[in-house]
Length: 446
Image: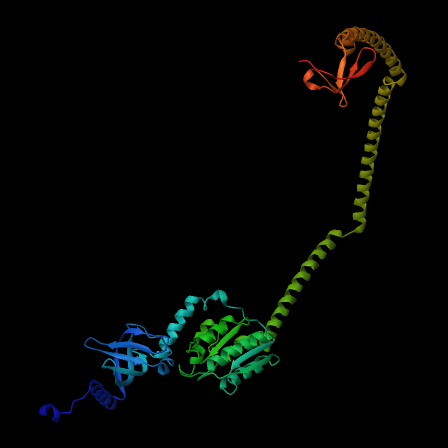
């Protein structure tokens, strides 16, 4: 017992705290490279992963305050270079690396973020040519989204003033780098679309590093350009610089000055085109007039002597007159022959002759009709006599004449055919051949 009393005994918590202190004091800032695995990104915003190589591994955590500054999305299997400090996660007794900064191994973080966003937006169709809007040939109002103090706006205004001083330029000043720049650029694009008085829009800035140009690689700017109803020209950096905005825009200009040259032609160019068109129109009109003069000269040569032309026309008139006379004589001859033929037919069709023939036919038809009517009447009299005899035989009067009577029940006047239709006390109507009586039933039989 005395042996244990002389020694200092630590609790697990105390031991872990001492180890944590040693690690944090001696490994305050370390750079480590390895391959990421077991990546977890909970809703808290923290990142948990393992950094490993062929011989060992270390648990890592990157808290939300640091992870939200990442421009790219880490994935399992990605090689990383991280900076952080060693500490101990006391509940498990495990040492871990608290990461404050990380970047992809072999490629910069911003470059990787650029590649990832470009691939995703391309898959969504934001770069498709079918969505590109045509740039107007001679815009009246040009909107410019850029910094009010940068060199880009001065270059654009100088070029526009030199090429076409009459065009109206509306400037929407924005931050073009740093925190919040992407949001301001996207808001400016939407403002111009709400204004609706802009024919075309230039969005850009002067040259710089990838970090300086990064606002034009943000997704919010890309979607604002894609959703714009106004055609957008992207003019970011120098000719070698490419941003996400360049791929989404309707037209990419290598520099802001080039954007100003692309958006409007110079007055000199337009005047030259107008002169060329005027020259072409003059040539076309001269060719047309030359052609008409040639036709007029040909007609003039064909006319030559008017008296000769009149002589030919007079001869033509005489020939036509003779031909007309022969045609008239031939027509009159044919008409006379036709009149004689019709007169002969009219004679044969004399109404008096037709009336006489009609009378003879009528007399014949009348005699035949009388004989036919007599035969029909005789046949009808015979049929009537036969039918009268049959009716007489079937007549109820003939039955009554033989002593029978017709019995009807009052008041319905229905004919009584058997004793079952009446009861004692019923009134009956009896009809004889001559006259009839009414009586009451006293008894019935059967």
